[in-house]
Structure formats: C-alpha cells, structure tokens
Image 1 (cartoon, rainbow, N blue to C red):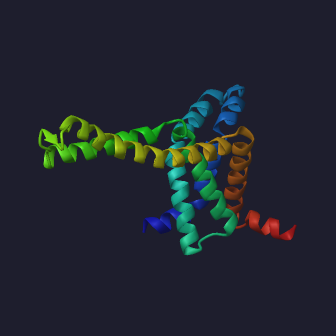
Image 2 (cartoon, rainbow, N blue to C red; image 1 turned 90 degrees about the horizontal axis):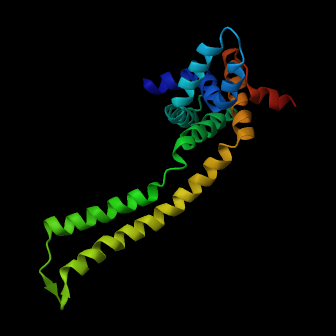
Length: 193
C-alpha cells in the first residue's frame, strides 16, 4: 500500500525535493520579497531542514518506481540523484568511519573480556597487551574499510552539493513534477528534440 502511495505522489515529491535542493538560493530570493518574504523564508528553511528525510523519501520512491516501472527513466533518475544529493548534504562532513571503527573495536574487546576472559598471561605475554591487540586490529581494519567508502561518499556529496549542480537538479525536479501533474514529461520533450 505505501509503495503505491509513494509512486502515486511522485510529482509532489519531485516538487518538494526540487525546493529542498535549491533552498539556499530560494531563501536569498524570498528574503527580498516584501509581503510574503518572512513566511516563505520560514517555509523554505523548514523544507531545507527536512532535506535529509526528503532525500530518503526520494531515493525510496525512485527505487520503487524503477522496480514497478511506474514512471519514465528521466523521473526515476531525477528521484534517485536528487535523493542522493539531499541525503549526502548533511552527512558528508561527519567522520563516521572512525565511529564505526571504534564501535567494532569496542564490541570485539567487550566480547572477549566479558564472554571469553583471558588468563593473566599467555606465552609470557600479559593479557593487557593481548586485549590491546584485540581492540586495535578490528578497529583499524574497520576504519580503513569504511574510510574508503566515506571518502567516496564525501566526493560524491561535494559534487552534488555544488551550487550550480543543486540549482540544475532542483529546477529539473520542479519542472518534471509540474509536467507530471499535467500528464507530460521531460522525457517526451527530450525525445522530440
């Protein structure tokens, strides 16, 4: 049921996603509007703050539309790319590889210390050094693995958060959303060119 709901409301999600993607520029434009400036500025700030959740919704809708072939390929691509851009925008600066590495090391050390405690000495090596190795090996391995993924996502997030790219994606989303409400598509327009 919720799958059909997301796919059916794709035009509205595209419009909201386009507004969220271009929220930085829209806030500057709306600020200069004399009568409606203040309420519209708050609305744009709220949509910008919800960009992470809107990005998740757009990605989910894009994947569902692709799975059920609900919309054309331009709509599916716009949904997924805009969703990724909005999703990565706030988290691209978080160093989560170190947090995941630390958690993995703590879990391994906790498992060994609580469930399988070591004797005070093994082959003449004190257990505190073995515990240190048990903590460091999974921590470093997990950190290195996730650091590559983190750097890749930061790179993609940096490209997708570039102002010209966000304005282009956001504008295309709004145009596609309005065209879908009118039973048209950018895909039809691109085919006629």
